[in-house]
Length: 420
Length: 115
Ligand SMILES: Cc1cc2nc3c(=O)[nH]c(=O)nc-3n(C[C@H](O)[C@H](O)[C@H](O)COP(=O)(O)OP(=O)(O)OC[C@H]3O[C@@H](n4cnc5c(N)ncnc54)[C@H](O)[C@@H]3O)c2cc1C
Image (cartoon, rainbow over all chains, first blue to last red; front, side, top):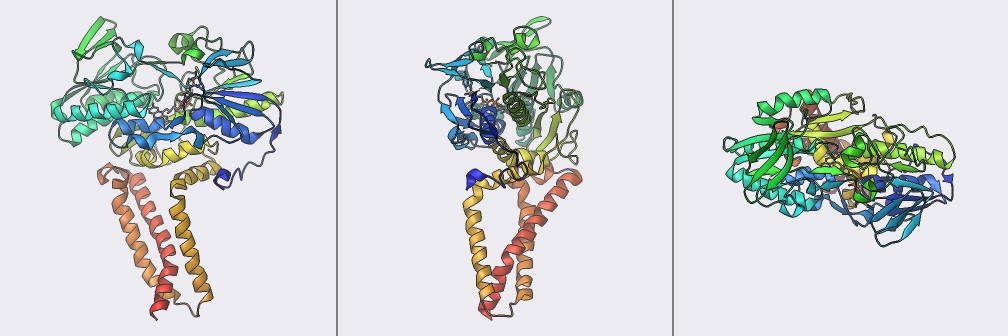
């Protein structure tokens, strides 16, 4: 009964496309699972295979709440199995090699899987090695926090933050250069921790610093301007063009590359956000951008930014964090990506030109403090594109926080099931 | 980006999914009372039942109003402007009306039993 979902497809009674195409989806995260669900409903006779070694499903947008003590880790952990349609074959292995010239992928176990169409949805890699002295095992120790990657890191970050809130001292929040998933997360971390200390009457005991690799805090100009005023008002000092390059956990010293040379700062709490890149198998494949900003930044998947189709390998599509586009590494983007990819993939199967166009949609509630947030939604032109006209994207409200805390997890699962 | 009606339904559905069994039990009980009233003696004390269901609904509305910020790990200080207060009031009103309608058949039944 549940498989039918709510009024299953009641407003889209499109006929299923008959095909014997072999479709492989690399990655069973938000984008991969959503693609699997939508494609399996849209196609009849296709052989759909999803390839991912990870069995647990992580609701990553909840990690910010875990790292700030609002949610327990268990709340963001689920099983992929619960969301995958029974008609999709799941190969529980990582892709070791993308071989688009031979239309196949090879798993780490050496199994070659041929395809007619490939969807790349491998997410990204948090590159701890990009910060000298940093490794994932340090998170939660010596005042090191990092909300990224998984609930264990977020949970250990919360321990480090709690210890800092008790003693106070100097907190540094970092933002690396280039594309990162949920570019709002480093900002949210700084604001939520600052808010906690204020609430606990410990704000006077702490100094807050935000070290950003570039010259802006946020890609959307109005929000950038707002934050440039808001941070100093809250006593958060901004350090422009400070890229975290090394950390000495024993001495609690962080080193930054700046235009004036290397600068060292001591800390009691540091939120380390390492550089992010495409996973190795993708980065080292011909599918990655071979030159230009998206090659230099993270060797992201090359796609046309609107059709999400590979320009050199037209039977390859991309969705989610792994794609090399100017903005958009959020779950909300996945919601917008997946229908575009499905539309264009169905058209490709039918030998037609696809009409799906992605407009750059990027969104999240920017958490300002406990109970308060701004619902930020913008597109490639960095224009605000609010889903709800009555919620101003420039005002701080409780309602976007309610969405984050209570409603977006359900919305995310609706996306996974290909229903939203 | 605009949200389609089917997307909104799907999101609502996924948010209710974890409460499926309690909701199903509640609806079945509600149905059982309705069937019993349907098959029972007439006239039904609908007005007297409503007189009881109304304050129950009002209590539910007050409870939602008072507790919603805390349930979302916030406090009243986080609410700002007509958007937040309007949303809270709409939620409280909605919950109150829903509880009133759910309580009404039970209240009628209770009145009948005590008649
Ligand atoms: C702290 C934090 C806060 C966030 N907050 C928000 C928010 O508020 N709103 C929002 O919209 N988004 C938010 N996001 C972003 C959102 O979670 C991601 O954008 C989204 O999960 C991306 O989905 P994806 O499928 O591309 O990647 P993922 O969900 O990461 O999935 C990628 C999958 O690919 C698999 N994979 C990797 N390499 C291989 C390989 N070689 N072979 C096979 N499989 C592979 C992985 O195992 C994984 O299962 C947040 C993220 C974080 C970390």
